[in-house]
Image (cartoon, rainbow, N blue to C red):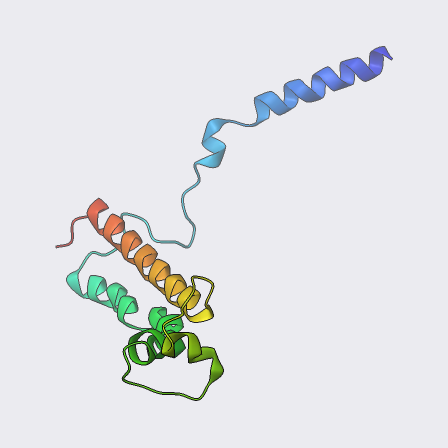
Amino acid sequence: MKKKIIFLLMACAGLMTSCKESFLDRPSQNGPTLDNYYTTAEQVNGATGLLYNTIWYEYQDKAFHAIGEVLSGNMYTGDPKYNSFLNFTVQSTDEQVSRSWYAFYKVAGNATVLVQTSNKRKVR
């Protein structure tokens, strides 16, 4: 019994002394750092190009047509999944509404990351 208690105490002491706070502060091996991130205006333009590309796919695929065109009366489709937009009975659980919110949050999140990163380092 004494051996188990001594072993348990030694194991606890070893665990408490082996992990330092600096263990979690590891530099990124493959990600961008303040030293290599956005040093020119061309790099900023290249990174922000994402905000005008596939990031909008969930919205522009079908949600744009449902919300922007069918709901406004500019487009008619025989597809029953668009009837709620045609009849102005859209609910928050509609698939196209969910797709648009997903896309908008995705775009806003990426834009926020770009803004915060560019604020950390001044572009020349």
